[in-house]
Image (cartoon, rainbow, N blue to C red):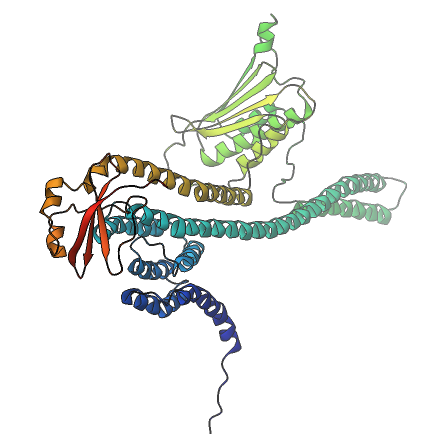
Length: 531
């Protein structure tokens, strides 16, 4: 005998929220089961399984889950607002706003419902103002909860984004700390290289002195020579090891730190490059001194190092990316700043392959110039070459930031999420207010325009006879009737249904036409009674 399988507990727990929601939404229709109309009673009874279907579709088809109670509510009342489905429309509209990723389908859905409901109200009720009640119910009972759900979704995304960014920032901080420790170790290794290199150089010097000492025999001089060679080899291996320990953004110094710009240009020319150097000292010209001064004389240390680095990198890039092109360097000293421009022409045509570039050279230059208190710009020239322009300060002192650092990708994403939440909050408040104001304005205009539409002419009223079929009466009276009788009008007798039409647009009197069994059974004129 096959054992009976127990239901999955996790599946039951997953179904419990939906079942509880269905019971909650079914409570208002259960209170209205005593509706006198047969159609309304059947619409209320059909709402229980239909609400269950809406609850099942609330995740996969949120707009369909809203459309189902909308349809059943319209069956009960053309003005849409009903006690049976008011809660269902608000809750399912809110859940649709939470679940939907895009807002455009919902906006088209609401616009379609409004466009179809307004003429439906006019045709079914044959009175002027049910369309206004319909639009207000749609706005406040469906659209507003949907906007609240959209805001809740955006706020949840902001919270999730914040936690993700916090985790990412924690990982980035850990990575920065690791890189900082590695760089500090590299700096310590560099200090050890300088110290040990100096000691090994002294050791090699003393060994060389012993190697040529005539007071020692041949074996000891040979041992001193081996010691000198070993010290030189140890110095070379130490230099290679320190080069391996350097980080990617640090390059081993291949030239002396105090090398001048002229020396860089001379070495570039010696390698076969065509380099011209132009130096202009505007400050010397303004003071009346000889214009032949050196614009790079007596530079602050940071400015001097940055100038050397920019010129070196620009010459290297020109040799790599535009071999054979002429390079022009212009140094101008003016207004307390040093202006450097390095421009090269386009690469001559030829089969030279494109060099492989890491793309970090200009980034490193920009950081070096920024730390020196200057600015760096680079880009293509109109003739197809490339130019780099740097402005460096001529005065020392604290380093000034050239500009605020650009926000990181994580910060930009968080700022974007915050802007979306603020925009969604403004929409949640502004859209209902704007729509309500538009409806009130439309109502005022409609009241001025539609007042003659319910006027029953005296001649048409006189044509009506007791006992006329309702269909024949409808051919005589206006299409629209008053929404309510004048104040103080007594209720009609049991079994009668009455319609009211204006006597004149500017009066408060109305014609009363009462029907029973689809025939005219009473007519008269009623006036408003002051209480």
